[in-house]
Image (tube, rainbow, N blue to C red; front, top):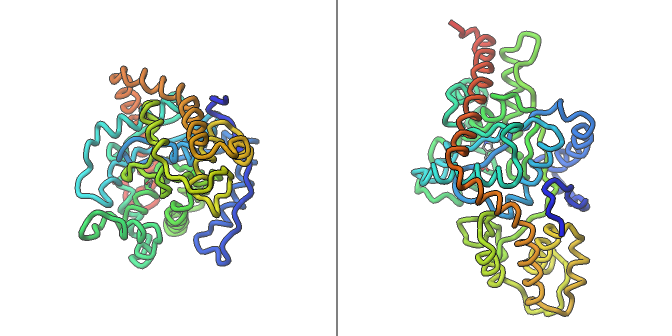
Length: 371
Ligand code: TRP
């Protein structure tokens, strides 16, 4: 059983790019391969910014999609900033509920998986005034048309729980540019849905430099580091998401995990195979076991074979619970140390404020607005 947290993901064939690379996915995939090379050679050249909205517990979809990769980058020696995007919670709902609980829960999840606050800066963006002030000049650099055609924002509007669309919904990608550029991050590990936001960040950086630069660029144009992890489905066969009750939280108990997997959707074919295109639900369960066991999913499926759904679920439950055991143990230990968790956040906020104030000063100098 593999319980190490910084193992490389098994290499999988890249998916074929769409015919018209609308989102820039295939470009980003090619770029990602060469970036990985440079990171291995010289991790000190990179500064990563990434983060999460504090809306609930992180789950296995997050873990194998991005969290695992963050720990890997940190351990390779890349400097990391993790934004807890508390203002961004308000894009699709009226109030941010249980904020303190969710923020502390995120920090517990981060520490449990191996994020080291000595090497990575964890902060909430609402606590960084100079970061937020960047939003004003940044908004002046993008058109309403550009903000309106963002495909991810359009999708979020379609799924929003609000009756009308707020101005924050349209402008949060520019705010996200401030999250990234305040610390001059040059690398942003993202899933495909975040590519339009990163493109906007690059546009803002370029336009700011063009409009106000005098020689040296103020902002880097950050690169996307695309996640190579395959998509894990929730236990009902749809996208894994906290709000759908189909997600296995990192913080869940072994019993809760067993129960969720017992209720997972499978299909009528008794023989277990790994075939994501035609057997999405069964294959996602096989994949989950394979990721936890660090094995090829086809071999995992072969071993189960005629054992059917019951044997598959047993295998998945054992693999997940064993993989998560050390993470859960660390999480439970940190949960006893609330003062420490709060200190981690205060330290991160202090550091982020120092960095943001320096950047804002440069921005105002470039704009001739330093009085
Ligand atoms: N939009 C991200 C999410 O919904 C969170 C986020 C906020 C973020 N600012 C960011 C991610 C900057 C990467 C870079 O999870």
